[in-house]
Image (cartoon, rainbow over all chains, first blue to last red; front, side, top):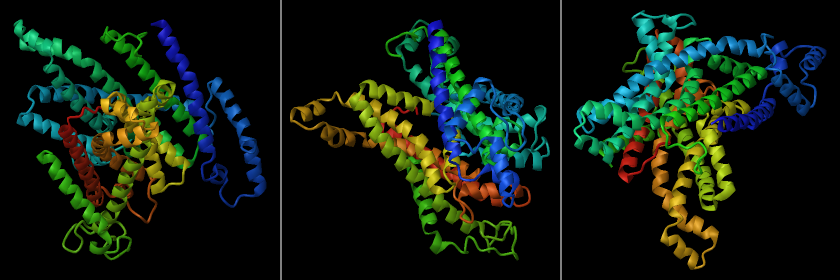
Length: 310
Length: 267
């Protein structure tokens, strides 16, 4: 287990080097020069030269990249071109907000998704199943920005129950969390349904029934235990959709998290911010995948971490 | 195909026909500014109302749909083409090449797709071609993974052995004998993926990274009108619902195609 963990963590290094070098090269070839947006188009050429020198953007691109890596090793992501604040400070102060939003969405999506998927599988072929299945396809088809705007229109502009936008306590958190949870909830309900239907048909369920075990125990102990692996996979993989959705949801609801920070960085072509966000996003991703791998191990003894088929 | 699948297909054909004949059937010029009728509610003169510059929302929705649908379909074909070729080689050749390709595929599949697409559309100048490249840069991976898995099974089939025994070259076995086997699979995956591509295109346009003004797509219309949501909700609702309905039809069609061919597709 330890060796496996170390191997996984070592794999992080080439991944991060790859991500940093690719994004760095790409962002450098971007159209638009950040120096002009800092001083305006009509600035004196000397002023522009001076700022270029300060930023180091007059030097060779490889030297710029090496300088960036050096900073990264020191735990620095550089300073924003606009606010002149350290990117790492902003990321650290905004990260808890995104985490709150993602957790809020998960708290809504996981129980409801599992519940709906379970009901749908248990009553498969019935009217209830058809209603739930159509609802979950619909949930997958509504873009997050539309559901966000509709939720905002209804709950805060018409009913005036909750604030439409801003960052703050629970009242501000509810609407964006609900918005963000919808696609994840729909995916989870669909996967739970197909997984459970497969398992209901397995011989061990018939055996359990033949042995006279109560229906409740079969459903919640025998079936659910076997369904956990694919469901945990989906919950983990879906973290990507939370990050996707976070960009849109945070932009719409004015939630001060990493998603909005990324978007603002992109619009202003604030390279250190974009790079910092992408690197932090990738790192979070790899760590989550690692956690899922470890969860597999404890959930299913059949998964051999050193096995040939891995 | 089930009833749901058929209805979705007819609706899609209807939406596409309307969008593609937009220049002939739209009642107004989509970009014509009319300051006398700003934010008119939906009615007889303007079916879907007008926007903050007096432009006819119905005409804009029709014209916008053309771009949205073309972009989604072309990106699906682009993803499919790249994924098919890579998947074929990966599955047929096996070995280290296969392992390396699948590592890249896994990486892309586990990465937040929209972020990756945003990354691509930041680097290239915003526009519809960039959106297509951005979608395909992420989309090929699921096609490659599926085709590769299928080829691994099919390449052991007797007809492949027979083709080899008859002296077919590797290229011929791969492209003449194996590739046609993948067609139903590709069809199903296309249906399943197109709904997602419609949403990705809409999201990128919403963020201002898609087609540039004055051209409108459904996503950019929602984005441009979102500050008017309480005073003129129709400006948001009509293009927004068009995105949702089109995506829903593609998803439902994909689902029923999958059930019809009895395929198990998780990605």
